[in-house]
Length: 495
Image (cartoon, rainbow, N blue to C red; front, side):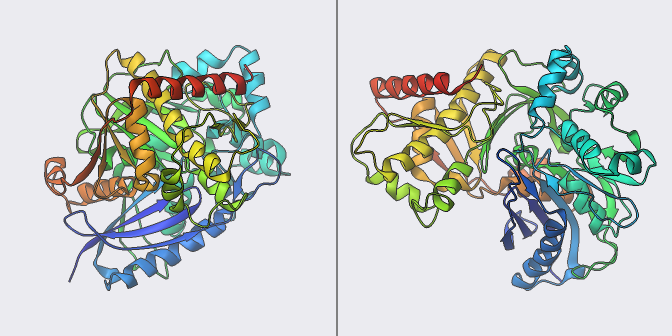
């Protein structure tokens, strides 16, 4: 018998299912992408049914690849793309509409109307969030008001809302469990993070029936058990739900006040653990809930970049600049001369610390001899520059300088990107051996809840291998690079 934890990572572009051993090592992994649906410019959707079908298939594939037995699974931990919104029938489980993705901007105008009504501070003080189309609340409102018959069904109590964690839990449990955790609830724009409960006043403003909403627990809890699945026997505990970025914070074991990490995925997300302190940012960041010592709920400051690795995917798939994303490292390193090409990938507006919903992507400094390779390098630099903006805002809020930046996510394998990040930050960047810290955090939390792992101290002893990048760029060059970026962002912003 070889016991293991199942970790499900429901990302923005694909699903991964992992099996982890007692040492927190990956035994096996299976992955599939799913369809990105773009009904209109700025609109992004997913098929909830496709996400679920692929999740169950990948669980079975991962177990098979690891030569494991499904009955030896100790627990399941789920981490997920946050804010993405699903509304489905309570009895049949059938979604009433596609999942509206966190990147979707369709409710920007509605957010603007709420701001004009003077409600921004009301939402910010209760939820820690800014009024932006990024978050779930206005997406729920849109589905209720724009899909025929849905509001009436919701008011009758026939429908349920969930972020992707809730949707997967509901299906894994055979439609028996409707719940979420503090980290995902804190991203909905309707959850009071000081009182840690759904906020009735905000629900009234957004016209959302309370009956839609899931139960809310800490990230490690008894959320339910598997039932009626093809891939797993009945009775396996679903013991952790956690938003992807909070999962990465815990996976990096940043459990103490003052520790921070930046994840480089479809977007980029910097989280700073503030412990029990509820702090409103003065520099464009948001306040959210995260996991601290032994997985208990704490506060964190967060900065979000909407388009991180997604800009590389866009160059690959839309413009056909290269065949594989990993090719970009060699491309960037092959260019010997400096240039003034600056890429601001505001495809879905600008996130923190700018929060400009109407900004759109732009490339500056193009001349007749500009090449696809130069644009590719500028795209990689843009990921680092956007993260620099987050770090600067974070340091201003906390009043002290970060000593090092812990990093994770698939894009951190790009040595050019990580070295450039260290250069423009002027500080060390540390990448762990396992960069899949998002799902590792979910597995850790599920393992702690079920006793598979005994404590965070035990987890900290499991792996100490990492790669370190130190600043090498000359100060004059660094200043020029940052100046060009700041000028480009100023030109791109609409407000």
